[in-house]
Every structure is written in C-alpha cells, then in structure tokens.
Image (tube, rainbow, N blue to C red):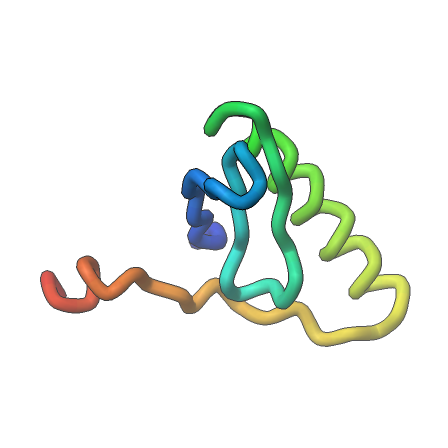
Length: 73
C-alpha cells in the first residue's frame, strides 16, 4: 500500500519544525528538529485514522503528490 506524503518544514513563527500530511485534514505535528516532527506526525496519523474509524469517517486514499513529482511523471 502506498503511504501518505509527509511535508516537513521549519517555521520561524514556531521556532521549530512542522510536519503535516496533506491528505489528512488538520493532521500535523511540531518538533524541535525534523526527526522529532516526523515521529510526532506519525503518531498523529495513527490517532487520526483510529478516530476516523471509530466515528465512521471516510479515510482518504493517499493521493497528494508534490508539484516536483508531478512534473517528472
């Protein structure tokens, strides 16, 4: 199964790293470094999916592709 794309970027406003999963609305996490942000967003993804299942909310298929990969296809 294809997994969800994860963005990780530095936020000057937050003085740390943000990781988000574009296919899962509002699924994001903060970390002091990229590794911590990644670890936290993986936990957030698991919680997001578990909550969706419990509440009979549709779980979207991984579709997001950054523009750089779309141009290469």
